[in-house]
Length: 255
Image 1 (spheres, rainbow, N blue to C red):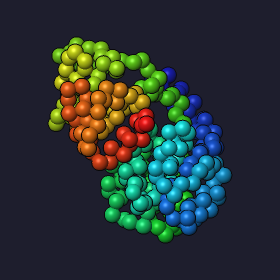
Image 2: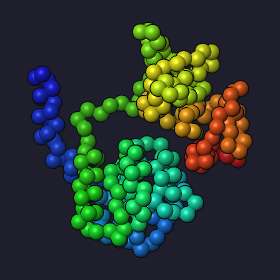
Image 3: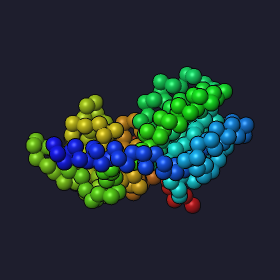
Image 4: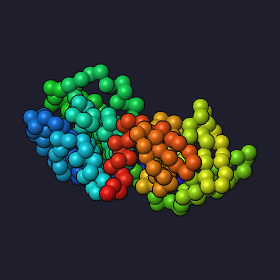
C-alpha cells in the first residue's frame, strides 16, 4: 500500500511536466481550406508541432510507416480511402481526432479506442479547444510504461486446462475467432483458447501479424499467394476483406 501511494504521488508531481511535452501531429484532409483552418487552430497551442499535412490517406500511411507522431487530425470523407479505412489500417494506436461534415459516423468512430474526439465541420474554436484538452489527457506519459509485444520475448503463453503452454510467435500461422473462443493454429498443433481477437492482437508483434478479416489474424510471413479476396496460408484458404486488403498491399514487398 505504501509503495502504491508513493508511485501515485510521484506521478502526480510530474503531471504538469508531462503536459508541457511537445506533441507531434499530422493533418489528413483532402480539402486545402479545411487543412488551413486546422493549422491555424493548432498553432494557438504551443505544445503541438505540425509535422506534415496530407490530402491523401494513402500518402499519410506511407509517412507513418517511416515516422511516428502523437496525434492525427483526420477527415472521414476522402476519395478512394476513407478516414475509417485509415483508422483500421494504421499499425499502432496513435490518437486520432476525427474532423468531418458528417455526423453519422460518430457512433462507429468511438468503437476505436484511439479516437479521442469527433468534431463536425464547420469547426468551432471552443469545441476544438475541448478536443485538444482531451487529447492532452490521453497523451499524458505514464510513470510506468507497459512493454509492447516487440519489446517482449518472441513467445506467447496460453492457458490450457490450468497448464501454461509456450508458443513461439513464428510458429503461429493463423488465429481464428469462434464466438467466445479463438483457434490458434501452429506448424504442428492447434489450440482453442477462451479469448478474443482484439485481446490477442495486442500481444502479437505488428510487423509479423495482421488482421485480414473480422474473424482472422494471419502470420504474413507464411502467405503462399493472394488471389482476389482470399489468401492461401499453407493449405488454408483465408478470406481477405476489402478494407484489410488495402493495408496488406501496402505491407507487401511488391515487385
